[in-house]
Length: 92
Image (cartoon, rainbow, N blue to C red; front, side, top):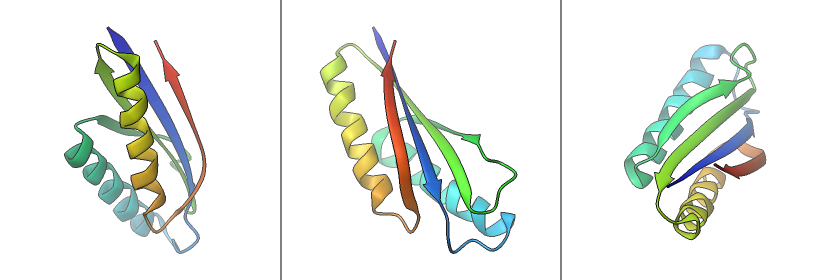
């Protein structure tokens, strides 16, 4: 069994308040969960308007399958209105 964790960090230049940021975060999390059947959580920068960090987690039997999954997750995240600053992927 392999557990994969992908951490995504975003800059949200168009967000002027926490309400707008929450709308972005919830839309992105819902989209990733529905398209890729992964678990998501906002893991950082909860008190900042224009930054957020989201963790995406999946479990599988083969690391290569998870690598392809996270490549697609990153591609989908880049299509959103925010700027993807960095991402990292770890396997357990």
